Length: 613
Image 1 (cartoon, rainbow, N blue to C red):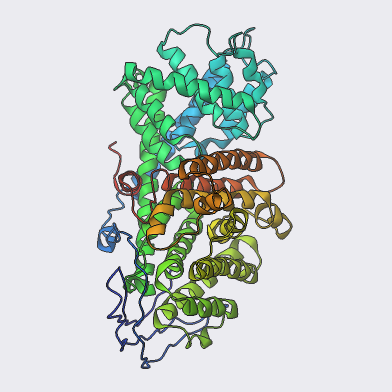
Image 2 (cartoon, rainbow, N blue to C red):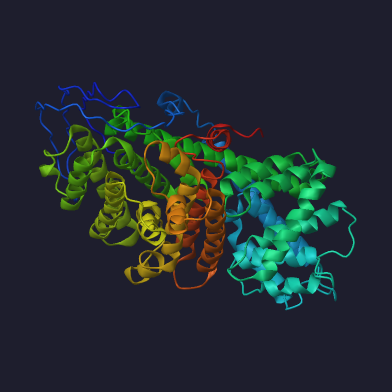
């Protein structure tokens, strides 16, 4: 995707360099934009020089950290694995791993061996190369599935918990009709899943598989809740006894990130390290080939990602928004969010489009949350609704910059969507953006009035202002997968699928940011609104309720994600990977405002640091 280039751009804001209370000077230097020749729905915009006298305006403080990823550093990334020799080596390894898959049929490999093979390539992030082979392996496994579970070998009379838990997880995630009720067969009279505890590696891996499948739960599956509680206790108790082993690293990773807080790219990076350090695993020649492919593939994809990051760095600089020093620069973080579940070269427009939209959303968030006055916020919302670049003279200078960035970006992504969907979706996107901006404006009005809404009122607006729809809609439509107009209501508004994600985006944000936002005077949050409705509740009780509410929503999201409703699986996969990404960013705080060490490390390990071959 070509980024928009401004051939001339000058901008001066002498009063915008203090991230605390902002007092612009009376004379703001003007700026000039000269846009490239217009394409469809893109106008040449010229904002001529003018003089403006601005009264000093006190603006609220934010405490966001500065950009952690210097543009010069991004542009210096080496993209070291782009040569044809790597492509040829990857083709050879892919062919050899396909032969391993095919050999499992001729060698009459067991059900468990086939499941383990699928599990390996999925965890290592190379499953996209083996979709046909995976389907054949799982079709074979499913033939032996029944309401008692499944045995290790196809002729086995006694289903075992290890194979059943592994099969249930993988088959369910591939949308086979399997019931969690099979796990009831493995509970003893005491309600436990084990009658005795040897704590051998085999037993520990069995309980790890039980834990992993318990996370792929639907709403109301009591047996999954019981399995999760049991497996969590068991694994936490056994961890100190195997401390420092590769198995302990695997358990710690799974306990910490689970499923809804994990993303495939991060999982692949961690499992490459875990499997690579396992001597017994590496003694098998087939495992070595699988790991060699995973390492090479990871590095090759990373080089592609570095190229796309450099495109974003150029776009960000040319937009002029980087000079609005009150606004967060987070295009690297949003790009990392996008690549968590998207590695196909053909999906470049999805990744870049998502990062651009996210970068804009967070700038708008800073305007509406802290920098803009209520009068300014109203006229910006009106300008977005008018969608007329020739009538932006009434906007404050900093808003003109954002409007131009916004206008061009939405039109650019619309052109990408025409290539994939064969129809113009600009009016559809504009309507979604208008609703989104007005949800921000509503929160600003509440703040100005000192009003704390009811929990229901807040969440109805918050599921929009949380950004799920606006972040997901246009990028998903750029995917090389047709999402017809008649299916949009099942994916987009007013679907339950989108409704749940809207709620979880809002909850994830508020649960982790409400205290910091309160210091800036922003009292309305899901926590405060719940406590308003329940005057006798404590903050801890409110958080317990909201976390439980979120857990139940994520179970319902799992059902909406995996059910067969005609919506392309590929579209849902990308949307849910974004849902998992926001859970990751808010795992230990606010990864966009005060990035934790974990987020910085994840970005470094996935986008910067090559894996040693």
